[in-house]
Image 1 (cartoon, rainbow, N blue to C red):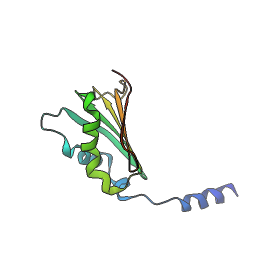
Image 2: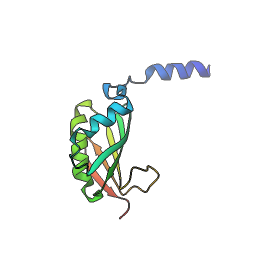
Image 3: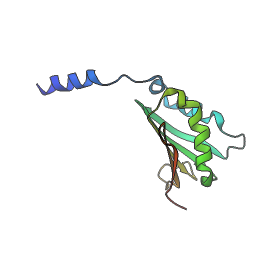
Image 4: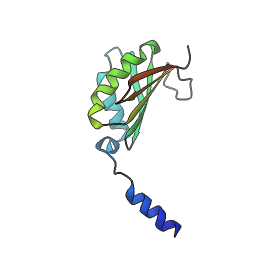
Length: 117
């Protein structure tokens, strides 16, 4: 009976959007399209599932997180994500401390949170 319930719940889940079908490499490449030539920032990792995306960005200027987030989010807005979380670090090492996080939602836009100096 438990397996039947799991099957019914599985069938009731919404199907992935076109953004979910992008490979991680293709997603990172797509998000880096607005990256400046001097590479002051770069998307190093990204994953999306259903209607949520999580992005890691390496930047020399974490104080520019909100402006960088706008450049990253704008090209993917048509994919209709419910939420995009962008984490900013000074290095590409994902174990290093996150300096800033910018959350984007259709309702609230960009909201920046300072996590470290």
